[in-house]
Length: 265
Ligand code: ADP
Image 1 (spheres, rainbow, N blue to C red):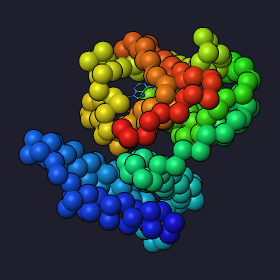
Image 2 (cartoon, rainbow, N blue to C red):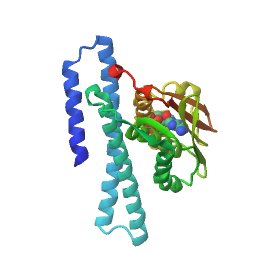
Image 3 (cartoon, rainbow, N blue to C red):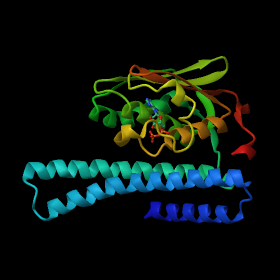
Image 4 (cartoon, protein in one colour):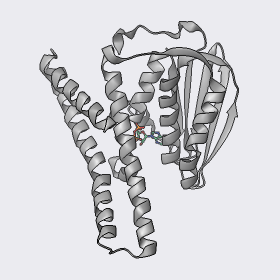
C-alpha cells in the first residue's frame, strides 16, 4: 500500500514533467525513447514475477501440487515476490533522486565500519542461497555522509556482486582510508563485464546483454549508485575481466567539504 502511493506519485510526476518540460526536439525524442524503454522494461520486470506468482498460487489453491511440490512452489512465490519488491524499491529510490526538489541529503557523522558490517550481515542470507561467500576487511572510522544513500549504494553493489557471481564464488568487501578519502571496494569472482559495456552500465536502464535475461533487473541499480557517488562528491572506478570478476571502488572525501552543488541533480 505504501509503495502504491509512491508509485502513483511517481507517475504523476512523470506526467507533469511531460507537459511542462521544454526539451529540444532531439532531447525530447531521446527522453521519449528512454521513457518507453523504461516502461517496457519495468512492465516486463513487474509482470514476469507476478505471472509466476499467480500461476503457482493457483496450482496450490486447486490442490494440484503434492506436499513436496507445494513447498517448491511456495519457495518460488517467495523469491518472485522478493524480486518484485526489489524492483519497486529501485523505481521509488530513483524517482526520488529524479526530482531535485525532493532530494534530501542528510549527512551526519557516523562510524562507517560498523555500518557496512551490518549491511553485509543483512545480505549474507541472500548470498548463501547462491553459495556465495562474503569476506570482510573493514577499518572503522568516522565519516560525514548520508547513511541511507550509502546504504543504497552498498546494497546495490553487493546485490550485483551476488547476482552476477558464480556458485561458490567469493565477494570481498574492503573499507579503508586513503589520501583523505573513504574507500569502499567491492570485488566479486563473477561473470565480469566487457570493456565496451563498462562505459555504459551506469546509464539508466542499461542492462548488459538482454539475453542474459533472467539475471539482470531493470538496469536501475548502478544509476542509483552513480547518484549516491555524485552527492558525496565521490568517484567510482571499475575494473573487470570477462569471466573472472569485477571490482567496484567508491571513494569520497572524508572531510565535511564533500557537499556538492545540487543544481546538476
Ligand atoms: P541490473 O538491475 O540489471 O542489475 P544495474 O544497473 O545494477 O542493473 O547493472 C547494469 C548492468 O551491469 C547489469 O545488467 C549487469 O549486466 C552489469 N553488472 C553490474 N554489476 C555487475 C557485476 N558485479 N558483475 C557483472 N556484471 C555486472
